[in-house]
Amino acid sequence: MNMPIPSQAYDAIVIGGGIAGTSIIKSLKNNNLSNFLVIDSGSSPAQGTSGHDGALCHPYVGRGASRLQRLSMIAFNEAKQVWAKHWTGKGVLHLARNAENHDKSLMSERLLSQGFSFDNAQVVSADEAKVLCGVSLAGTFFPEGGWVNLKKICEDLFSDLTNQQTMMRCTVAKIAYRDKHWIVYDEQQKIIGVTPRLFLANGLGVKALAACAGIDLPLKPVRGQLSTFRFKKESSWAKCRPKAAISGKAYCLPPIEMSDGSFQWMVGSSYDENEDDLSIWDQSHQENLSLIQEMLETECDPSEIEPADAFVGIRCVASDRLPIMGPVKGHPGLYILTSLGSRGVMWSALAHQMFTEHLAEEMRHSAFLDTRFFAGARLAGLGLSEDLVSALLPARFLAGTSNSKPILPSG
Ligand SMILES: Cc1cc2nc3c(=O)[nH]c(=O)nc-3n(C[C@H](O)[C@H](O)[C@H](O)COP(=O)(O)OP(=O)(O)OC[C@H]3O[C@@H](n4cnc5c(N)ncnc54)[C@H](O)[C@@H]3O)c2cc1C
Image 1 (tube, rainbow, N blue to C red):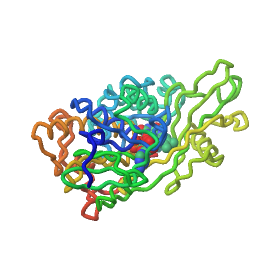
Image 2 (cartoon, protein in one colour):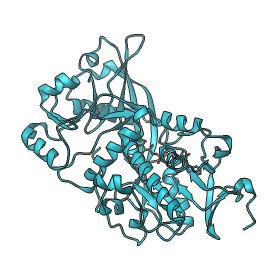
Image 3 (tube, rainbow, N blue to C red):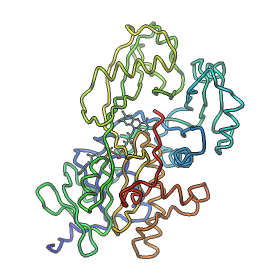
Image 4 (spheres, helix red, strand yellow):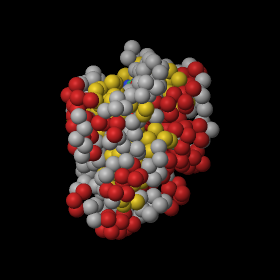
């Protein structure tokens, strides 16, 4: 390696300017690390999967206290704090899978046994849901649930960075480790920067860069389309429109009334595995519409609603459907944050808190602690146990097999 020129030497380099990269930059700043560089192929931040403004967030509800359920409860509480400035909405109604068998007392007992309280998760009957959310459908109401504008979070953070801290329109083609430093190369094989701390936060692109370090991660693309529909105020849709965000087989935000009296309604999201086509599909609009009709049990006239816009993104999903976050065992100074799947809001917030703690611990010891992810006493006190942290670590894939049981997504 040629000696790096001073402008190429950084305390940290982050690859990826979406919500994953943004949450890491926040962690670096919390540790007073300002000599960092964030690199992204896009012309501005959040041009990839984080480029949308309607990302819903509420804890996962399952039958038992699975790892996903336990992690999502902790991550949801972190997300409310970390993204508080960008949080919108006053509650999310998560619909019962089987409304006919929706036993209120049984469900309440189950939620209490999973660590919820009546303040943060309320089992509601169809009549109660009508008053709260405008739809006569039983489910669990999360009063603190809401949604965030992922793009705005990223843009706001980048607007505070200096020109020396960002490099846009630059694709990282290769990484290598030499003399206790990570070297980052562009597509012309030129060195972009050299650093002791390298964060891979570039979605599906992590697979190719991790492979440069001999790490094989089981990541795959899942295409998603979030439709914005339009309907008139005198249409049947206006009469049965929800007043809150609703989730289930699909999800929707409450429709927004426009200045001309029509409504715009965000409904998502299609889920096409192993697809990475970013064009808008009519078929996905149809799919979103049928799912939401089925979910809300409406008989509104489909001819009175039309697609107005769409966001298409490619989710990055690991084979066990959990996020991948933390230091990489055996690779000092290398960290990964990817595979946020359909839960970018909460996993990025949890990662931000964990990286803040981990970096502080490393700096206290002046060492890279790659065999563990130090999440700190506060998160441990909130239930982030060793087994949950292990379920997140890249190390779960390093031996060639996952130590995580596959968990299927809820929607
Ligand atoms: C339709 C849809 C709806 C969704 N709804 C929700 C929701 O309701 N709630 C929720 O929590 N989540 C939702 N998600 C998921 C959420 O959007 C993602 O989990 C999140 O945005 C992923 O963020 P990221 O930073 O990992 O990836 P990205 O935002 O894709 O960022 C990766 C960045 O890396 C850059 N990059 C890639 N490779 C390189 C390279 N080699 N060199 C330089 N730069 C590179 C890219 O340009 C990109 O900017 C949804 C996703 C989709 C598609």
